[in-house]
Structure formats: C-alpha cells, structure tokens
Image (cartoon, rainbow, N blue to C red; front, side):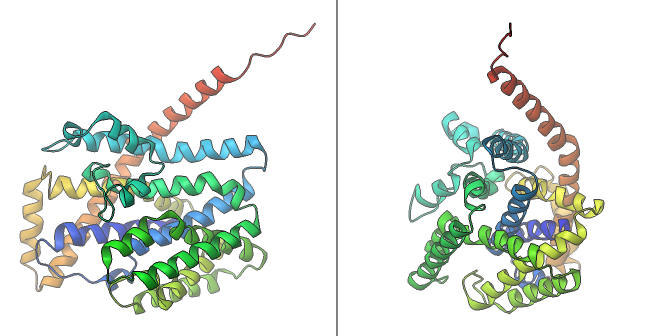
Length: 372
C-alpha cells in the first residue's frame, strides 16, 4: 500500500511539473504516462486511501470512548502539524520576495491552523480562487484542510453505517449537480465546486471507508485485489480530457481502486520497505513544490542545475524524451529531498510535538486527591 500512496503523491508532482516547468518550456506531456492519475484525480484517490486508513485505525486502534476519540485526534495532529508548520514557516521566509513580507502574521496563523483553508481558497475571492492564503511553496496545504475536516467528523460518521450511507448519497448528489450545471468545460467553477468544496469530495473518503467495512468481512485476496487495481488504472486511462472525476469511467476507476485497497493492505501492511515508501508520501507531497521552485523558478537557487537539465533534455531525440528526462529528474530530486526531510526534520519534529503535548496534558491533568 505504501507504493500506491507514493504513486499518488508523484501524480501530484507530475501535474505541477507540467504546469510549472514543461508548459513554460513548450514541452509535451500526457496524462497517460501516469494512467491519467494526476492532479485532482490523485487527490481524490488520496482521499479514498485516507478514508480507508482512518476507518481501519478507528476500528483497530481507538475505542469508542471520549478518551479514544481524543487519542485519535492527538495522533492525527502529531501526523499533520509538525512537518507542515516547518514547511509553512520556511516557505513564508524563503525566496527572492518572501511571502511574509507582503502578508500579515494573521494570514500566517490562518495558514498554520489549516482547518477551513480549502473553503478560503474556494470562496474568499469567489468565483476566482484565493491562493494568497499560502506561500507559493506551501500551496498544497489546502488539501490538509479537507483532511482535517474529515478527521473531525470521522469518529462519529464512520462508526454509523446509516450516517455513512446518507452522507455518501448527499455528496454524490452534489457532485452530479455540479457536473450537470457546470461541467469540466468551465474549469474554474468546476474545480471550485468539485475539488475544493468539501461536501462534494466527502464521498471519496467514504468510499475508502465502505471498502474497508465490506471487504473486511468478504476478503477478496491479493490476486483479485491486484486485478481490481489494474482495472482502476485501465478505466482511468480511458477517461478523455479534460480529466475529471465525474464521468462513468472515472467513477468505475474510483470504485475499483477502493475495492482493491483492503486486500493489498492486508498483504503488505507488515512489509518494511513498502511502509517506508508510504512514510515518504507526506514529505514528498509537502516539499515537492519547494524543490521545483528552488531548482527552476521562481526561486532558482540552483539555476545552473536547472540549465544543465534543460540543455541535456534538448540534446535527446525528441521533445517527448526531453519531457520524460526533466520529469524523471524532478521526481528523483523530490524523493531524495523527501527522504532527507523525513529523517532530519519530520521524525525529530514529531517527537518534539509529542513531548509538548505530553507536557500540556500533564499540566491540565488534575492532581490526585489525597486520601485519608
């Protein structure tokens, strides 16, 4: 499962590489290189994986008491915030024109909290998207706002099949209405209402949860699960541009993907190498924009390296080969940076965050009453 999560993160890297590097250089790229799983579809599939994993840990790790729910929230906070806060602060102060110099501390605080950031992006300057709430290199943080919203409701929604089915139906109906009234051809409004609007994306989280609930009782086995994963990739590849997640091939791809997860997870959850790849997913997701900015633009701290990459690519046989070379270089650089970030920054930061939470909990805990 760790390899799947890393593949989805690299789908986001691929999408941003197209927009930020390949398109300005007039180089071609095809979504079929990643089976059309890139950008928004990668994020939607991420939500499916998140729904599955959160459903699993709530079922197997946290009991249905207030202390269990608080422990769940603490675990999620320790997972999200330590690395996020470091990336956010670094992104705010680094660069030729530091973001913090033209924005208030209040905006930095708003970005740090994350909760509701997806709504701010979508509606603060509606119908335009408001990206000023994040520094350039930390723009992916809005998806963490959606994740946090899901975490807040998960302990209650995922433990009730009725609530799950009702919210799934409502979310699916919202998506159908958005597709019918706006459609992917009106890219700005479609992205706002189908991509940033949490009630419309909730169904992807819930699909992951339902897959866990249903297939835990009716396991499919690894071979069938891998076949479903292959079917998901095939169905995604058959979807025509502009790529959305609201056409029949897209929904079939998403259903096959969700159904594949329980069997693959059961077969691989104890594999150390695959778990390591999964652990790289979060730093890959958070640092990749900074890596692109630092090597190429707008920061260009390693302009000589960027020049070498571009010129080496031009010497290849075709523009497609040039694109592939640049893409592979960026992926390699991002994975290397993520590995260093996880070891040198994320693990120590999470440990420190846990210590602070322990101290805070000890201070708030009432002293035991003396007994006579």
